[in-house]
Figure 1: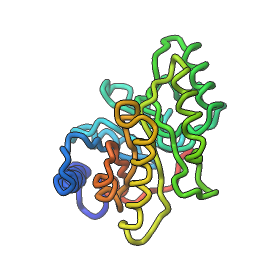
Figure 2: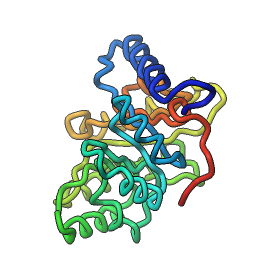
Figure 3: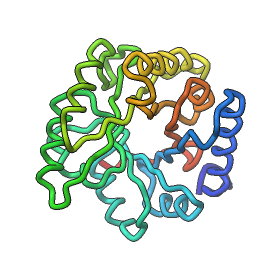
Figure 4: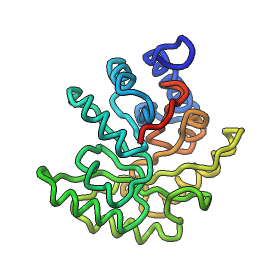
Amino acid sequence: MASGQVTIAEALRSVRARIGAAAQAAGRDAEAVRLVAVSKTHPASAVREAYEAGQRDFGENYVQELLQKAEELADLPDLRWHLIGHLQRNKAKLVAPLLSLLHTVDSVELARELDKRLAASASPGTLPVLVEVSIAGEEQKHGLAPEHLAELLQGIEALPRLALHGLMCVPPLTEDPAGALPHFQRLARLRDEHGGASRLPELSMGMTHDLEQAVAAGATLVRVGTAIFGARPAALR
């Protein structure tokens, strides 16, 4: 159950309506914006409820929690897992085969480790990845400085088991959602400067409080948790 007496299905409809309205206001097709339901710290039963309401893309921050939920929900064949939190290199082998999209590659070392682990796995495949950009230069956040972006993009493209799909950012938290817009616009400009949508089709940006600004700036993936599942309980790491 989401916050109050609103069901997860109702909350999903509300979020999708917000995405649709934001897309219309920006002159975009709502189908071009994919909703990633951020289920971190919520139980597998909440993911199942959202799945039954038609949601397929789910975002997790912590490797251990992702592994537990993936095991509990293995009967849902077309569920797509996204890792949106920082991934330590020593945990790459645990999650690489499970992911539909990794949003947080920020070093060539991590990219190479992922490539190596995928090549050694029983069912080697190609993992779609995004590069996380430190769009505001906040020291407490992960992400790559924009001036190093070209080098990492080229490094990923040289690895056969990784598929470069785009960019991701987490802007500074502001009380006014409009404060996030310049950061989203900067990520979109970086995409344009480094090959455009043909090379980097995905822009992962925007959360519960600022998804409208993200859609206006060109987001193709929005990561929404609280508006769907309610306030987060304690983390399971």
